[in-house]
Length: 306
Image 1 (spheres, rainbow, N blue to C red):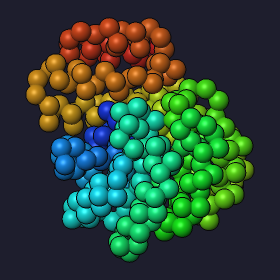
Image 2: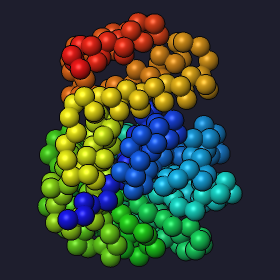
Image 3: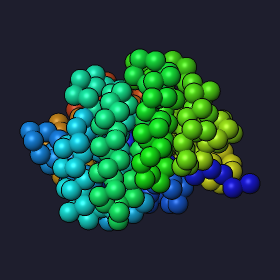
């Protein structure tokens, strides 16, 4: 049986170009598509560092945009098209209050006029493949119902549903029944997002899975799914250390000094405690210098007795 397609979810501060490139190299072919952290408008222009990270021509990668008005959406789509992108993902799922207050992310689901305008903008760019990522609501798990007819009218390659409300953030139950209802309502493939660690956990109607925290914590996850076998710990940790080394090298080349590099690398391990163990995770969190951090990284395999 062919395993479902696996997408790598965008997470701000984690899945930057350095991580995506390294993961694609080390776990080749296991992820069908990577999505960049969202590109936003800031100060009346597309935020430059977001645009720099959304590298046109990066294999199997789609930039995501977040917007609260049609003008913001058009500005971002224009900028990405000029940069050479041919696919764009619409963020209608971000749960963070600063974005919700601007009408962005999951708040866009409550704005049917904005969704209509988004559908019209999509039609202005026939050469661009659009997709959309959404929550099932902001405060209530049935708020998707009012948005579904507008989303169904959009020319989309697929929709990804994080089956929680924005109010839940990343905690609490994943509402699989709501996901199944959304999937039945929309005329395009629908991917499931939300605490999935194995393809067997996919609910009916799912075309595949998008995983974020699961893939960050266990980067071999997609490769294990694709191969249909669980890797032994020594193999998982060996490849995890290779991934870390590639990411550290890439970030060191663009950052200024050890303090910046330390701040950029410590989050790499944020979701990894289940793989590397509490002792190693604690040592990495407590490191206050790059030298201490590097020693903690070097001790991982020793402490695991691999």
